[in-house]
Length: 151
Image 1 (cartoon, rainbow, N blue to C red):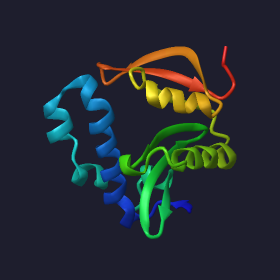
Image 2: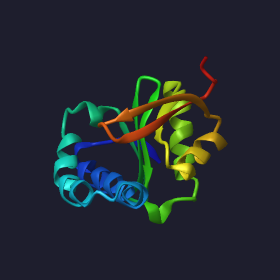
Image 3: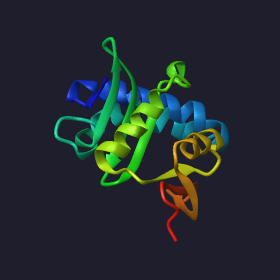
C-alpha cells in the first residue's frame, strides 16, 4: 500500500535513504566522514519531522506494517526514490514510480551519473536521459532523465 508519510515514519524513512546512500553511493565516493558520520538517521529523521516540506511530499510503500520503500515528489520531479535493499527487485520501486507518474504527472528526475542500475530502472519505466548534467554539492555528478525527451 502506498500512503502519505506520517511523522512517526521519519526514522524508517531516514534509515532507508541512508542505507541506500551507503550501499549505492559510498563505493563511488569513499568519503568515510560523510557517509558514516555526517549522514545519520537522527539528523535525517529530523528533516522528515511533523510539518516539514520533505514529509508533506513523501509517500511510503507499506506492506504488513513494514515500510519497504519511499518516494518524494516536488511538483513533477521525483526527488527521491529508494527501496530497502532487501526488498529491491520485487516491483516496489516500479509501483512507487508509477504512483508518482499517475498521481502527480511526475516526468523528470536527477540521478547519480555513476548509478547505472538506477538509470536502467528509470529507462525501463519510460524515462530517457536528456543530456543535461549538473554537479550537486560541488562533487556529485548528476544526469537528468525525463519521460518525454526535453529539447
